[in-house]
Image (cartoon, rainbow, N blue to C red; front, side, top):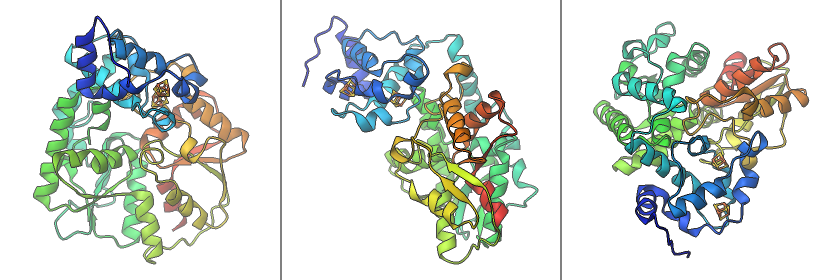
Length: 384
Ligand code: SF4
Ligand code: SF4
């Protein structure tokens, strides 16, 4: 193990205390840089960031500290288990503690204020959180119900992503699932705000959600977002609570296997599936989405080059969903181009964040008449 000798030892200690302890194992092989998606679109060195962290000389206000999308590719490929994401989050916690504020972080400030006041990052009224559920007549959760459906912030408020919540409700109703929502009592899961370094606000949101889950007698939680899935499953247990968390792709497989959901129509399209980082790499759910797509008659599933464990990040994780990315630096452009070059008519995924990034690229690149971007629930609702 490398001993740290730095004139800025206090800063090194602070980074390590804030969660970046494993940086001391780095031996600067550079493998992280070879797999990082940023190096497909610009120059970014996680190796350099780690080195600077070990000497306490990182300039935390620079964009470099805020680039990482926490996709997990470098973590999976590091021979020394350095846990690069923990280092980045530690630096961002430090920046939050010092009140670092610049143009780049303006949208993060707005999201922070909105999360504190309304429980969502989009400066939307808490009272409107469940408006999407009125038309399908979704009920509020009660203890007798089978499962709590937690749509999360994007499907609750975003015009495009509401389609995903509606598709989910349609499918659940068709399968006769006794489910409910928290309505205006639902708060953001807190995933992105934690990744940009605001640990206090993350804890507040998590505790509010946990209190509501316990009060309502929630045992099983169904989510669309892999970010909610990851946070509830892997991070909320830090508060000594354990709920059963189910991603929609897992639940739909379960419903089909139990014979509660029947696929009755054809879907004669060429489709390629994009693995979201927080569903695949972070939580090892690769098979269920593919199993679902293979159940659909007429659907031709084709694989992209960077798939499953090697999937290319859409660029929206790690709080980057709030931070502007230059059009020419978007990883999602590469994804769309690849799907188009394969002749796919639909690029399907299972994450609201990915849909935001991929839709922006699809429209930005002028492919609106060439390819569609859909959530897997949107396809399923068409064939049942
Ligand atoms: S892959 Fe791991 S050991 Fe190699 S430079 Fe990156 S962080 Fe250091
Ligand atoms: S987690 Fe992903 S985006 Fe972040 S440095 Fe590693 S490879 Fe790059």
